[in-house]
Length: 439
Image 1 (tube, rainbow, N blue to C red):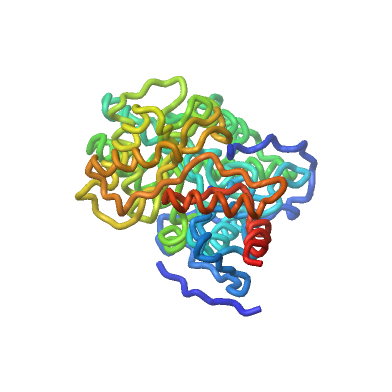
Image 2 (spheres, rainbow, N blue to C red):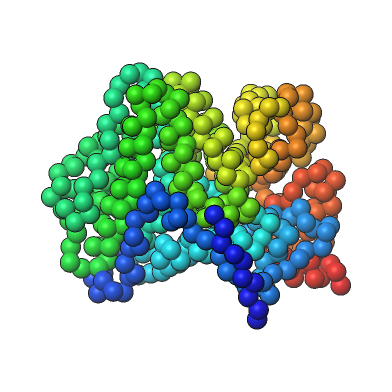
């Protein structure tokens, strides 16, 4: 097989499952953590090598399909966009509760998989809803949760000094164990009880426990650097804090994917309109469960983060019930902020829309009955329509008998509506169905 050598220049619930019981193993069994990321832009990963011979091309009548990136590499359609699931991309756990792949291997899987496609939707929105797992493998570039920026802006607006995240040296067990509560570890910022519990354990001489604690402490150190950047900006006011936080989030994105892969092949998904389950149980979005933040602080954080990410490449915001006027107004308000008539840039905003979903966003009614009217509302609001795309939820089910005919009918219907067709099937099955239709 031939390799296409490309020069280096410049996307269900994604919460982790409980780890399996631990057992003592030699430390060499699990790859050691990679070196911590630096602020030096030369640390951005290069554009990856990938096997061009395995790339496929879907017929033009199917180029609006969005299947799942399963498997993450190997045969995939170069002219299709895909969705990828963070849990699926990490792969299997071993008997010790670690992921079998290292953090760097998982990150390279994302880069290679995305680079061979038209684009990949990737959820990157909360501490445990991003590509790195903060504990169960060596972290590569942990993203500061967007809600941290909301909190930092709110505290600065209230003229309260921001307390830093405490990250002692990795091997200083006494200093870590002295941080008795999550609040002592995380300072002014939203705490993670699980990350605190693991990071403050003693580092034993045995793997996997030693490695698990090391991973957690390295994740805390990355978050502490992000918090320091916002603390340093606080004397210049809330807007400066929001800009500093947005810049740190952008930096983490580019460190993880690489600048070119991020710009050309990754569509970062943010949960701008989370439901109660997502806020309470998954800590998604810009709010903090159980803590009232001023709406103007959340608005300022959102504008800064989304606008900064939009400079780097396409973004997606989710999810809006088009049958509810207040949710249509909310979506239009965000679009006007990001791609109003005078907004700079050329990258696009993908809007996830639906007609009513269950609490987990997996089942319900799609957006097709409402999409025409909503498009007219958006156009009338002064939004640059050339920079807006829509994705209807939930996935269109393809299964049972006559799957090829089901695919063809759904593809025709969504093509007529000017919508992409999201599918919960991967490349192998999609390839078989397309081949069957072609025959």
